[in-house]
Image (cartoon, rainbow, N blue to C red):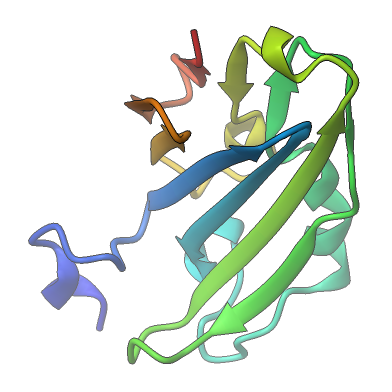
Length: 140
């Protein structure tokens, strides 16, 4: 189970997708990841309180004087796999000064090996693979 998705399909253990968007002074991040990356049982299909307590530092923005809102986490089984969706938004006092997206989640959750990150705005798109040794995507 899970091996059949190795050909670049969405559900590959160790890999997650992260999309960051900006609307005015608000940045929003959506992480889609197999529950196994969080060290969770896909059979149980729930975010534990321990994991939920780690989510506020999962994704960070550099610069912009931003305040993160409480993360929202839900489980999605619609693909036939058990994926976790984590949504975090920030309100930034100086949104144009946000310079990078960081994924400190590698240290909190050893199951993450690679995060395919993309930053989408009306005028630009930046993308990069984040890894434990290179966990930052420049937004400039």
